Amino acid sequence: MSLNLKIAPEVSDALSENRPVVALESTIITHGMPWPQNLEMAREVEATVREAGAVPATIAVIDGALHVGLESGRLEALAQAKRVAKLSRADMAACMARGGTGATTVAATMIGARLAGISVFATGGIGGVHQGAESSFDISADLHELAQTAVTVVAAGAKAILDLPKTFEVLETLGVPVITYGQDHLPAFWSRDAGLASPLRMDTAAEIAAAHAMRAAMGIPGGQLVANPIPPEAEIARDEMLPVITRATEDATRHGISGKALTPYLLQRIYDLTEGRSLTANIALVLNNARLAAGIAQELSVTRV
Ligand code: PSU
Ligand code: MN
Image (cartoon, rainbow, N blue to C red; front, side, top):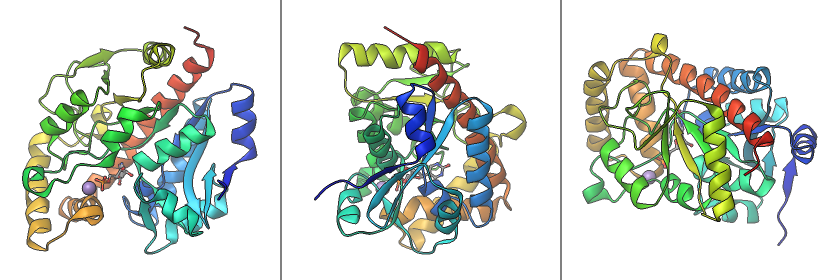
């Protein structure tokens, strides 16, 4: 069985010339946002990466091939598709071996980025330890992927639907550097302040790139999580989000939602409860992450340790 890796010409040209490339995920498109805002977001994120001087590479599995860089028609088809698989480390290879199609989560996108030789990836928020994990054991494979795959992931922290203190404890246990950009406390996805101190703080893309390169030079496996706070004008305050998150979580429990369906359910429920404001904030933070990721990719293309 050979790997069918389809790297878009624009992406492979940039990589071979050591020009900056930013990987982007596809689960946020298929499971994280409603149509048609999902497609608008995906296109805007790609445009933002370009404006910031890097080449975007949206990753997805289509008919058994691992696509790195999606041509416009394919992106649109994916955004409109119903019942697409949500792929992570555990099921990505099985889907590809069968010739299937699926969107890549943070974990699966990191695997795709590594296979293509891309070091920087931008998304909204990573998965983590769900509330109630002490009984459900629901901890996202994203955390373990960060521990073993050398990609710097730029996110607005972990999604605030999670148990954030436990999520950051697990990241520490796994040896994943959590670097907050420009402030001392961790952000909480839609909000700028999670009420938790950040393990690390960096104020420039160059520092983040240098830390990535130093890990490589030392042979330390795994990536870095860059927690980039949502812009102030786009945030929804933590006090306002907490009751909404509690309500959505209770609804999920009442309806018996678990496993892969949980995160998409919570995001949709919070969208309804905030009358769409959560989506506006989510799009703003993704664009903000795309800009920073492009800056890190640029620094990395000139960094030597
Ligand atoms: N960021 C967003 N929205 C999303 C996601 C990230 O702004 O929907 C996706 C990512 O693909 C992440 C996934 O890997 O949510 C987490 O899913 P789970 O909790 O089932 O591991
Ligand atoms: Mn899970």
